[in-house]
Image (cartoon, rainbow, N blue to C red; front, side, top):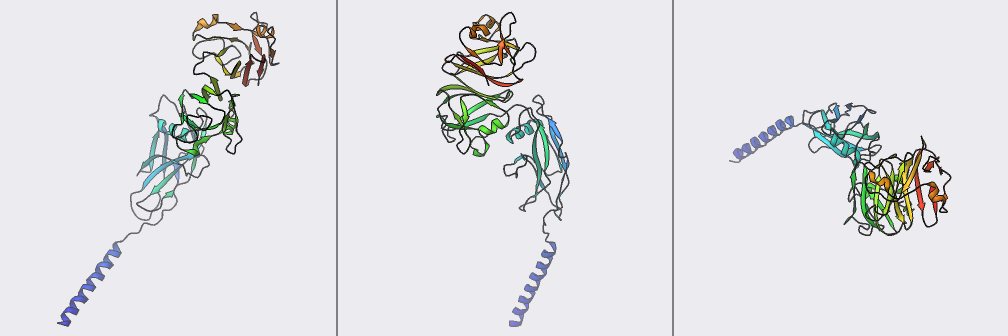
Length: 375
């Protein structure tokens, strides 16, 4: 009896070992992939995106297949990140199991703006492919730098003690609405600090004072660099309700008193961006920034006649030509000190003539001190 039991035990062990050997022969281990590369596009290639064709191809990509040593389905993710970054905040443009993909213009445009691309300016971004198989560690292709000229702009946010309704938290951030690359909001300012952000709740998306000056923005007198370690904005104007505007077309940041333009003056003339026209928004607003102080940040053009006049009202139509207005002698005879870059045009209407450089300038009329300056 013992021999029979022993024999059965030996047979069972033998069968287990034979089965184990067969299973081991069938096991396939996925080894790390060899490096793989993006074939198209190449570093330095570029695209100009058009808001009228958001469904058109924005980027078409192909790449080689990584060798995982074992036939298996590979999942690819196309990642986009700010140029020169480590992809820690990469966006996934698309996923596929093929070695090619096309991303639509609208999607690429949005991703480029989130990555910090400047609207209507050729801006580089980094792109790579991530390959994964099951639970194995991902492998990555080479990185290419692709230049994108995006359109439009993203809405932005602002928080900080300088905006009491928001404070330094994300419970109720100020929301700036974007239209035609111009961000606007009505905000009650206090004399304190704040910062702009491109992504809600993301502290890493902040844009401080040097960010804008580094891009060549001209910033209104109501703001200064707080020099507080984070170089935030500090509001130094008259506390209260202001119309805040970040114009990414003209690269200006302004804040005018009041929720409307009822108390503003207006500049019209050949030296101003809109010329001698009231059509659309051609006139340049000379907004109230403090009691009796009006300011406009505009590009003055010395070409041609380079003349202009100050209007004290604007009804939104060509009927504004009949609104009260003031020329050079009107201010000079009233005892104003006028900047040397402004002279009497002697053009029959004695308009102002701008003789400074072709540049974005800060034009200020201080009715308290009776000074007209160009900075």
